[in-house]
Length: 247
Image (cartoon, rainbow, N blue to C red; front, side, top):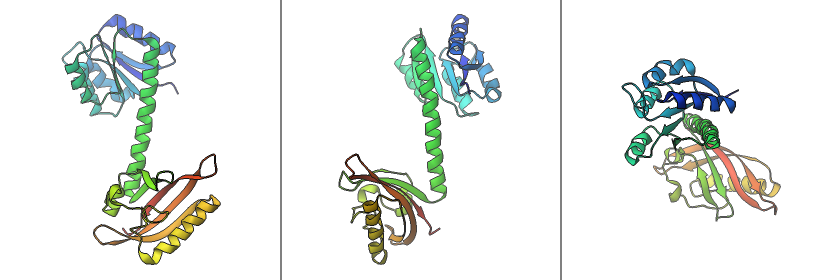
């Protein structure tokens, strides 16, 4: 599907010219307005994938104020346009979290690259945030444990501290599992044996074990993961997902 662009531009010649350029790139220009008020009124029904917003507009609202009103209605990436660079104005624009601030006259290919990258980044961030929200609702967390860097955890989801009570810096690796120091003694040997067997056979693993949280509570965990090997057939890291089954 063509990407849907909403253009809000004060100068008519630039508005028409930008619209024609966008259409030549294959975008669907769902609307072009001179006033921010008109964009606010129609944005919900137009459902744009991106706002191309001039800072200076006709009417009572400037581009930044228009975006603030639009963001109350829909979640959409924004690229600002301006005929000049003003540090104070750019700082004000940052409050709306735009993808980029472009200075007119616009370079056509730079504009196309900016639009494509803005939309792709927005979609990727939405998927990432949705994944984290789902994991939080399920009391889950993801991680990547790096075997090339002393078993350090190079990635973990934001739910880690909520579930364990610890920050990642407070966890000291014990054996081949980064939560080894938290696993209750009765479960530890089984966990390490299964994990080491997975590494030796290069197969995914499933683990059931209990950990002791920072507050001293015992929680039941269920974990799935897989070792990842490099070109020299040595393990690089383990990617995994852990669920807290205690609640």
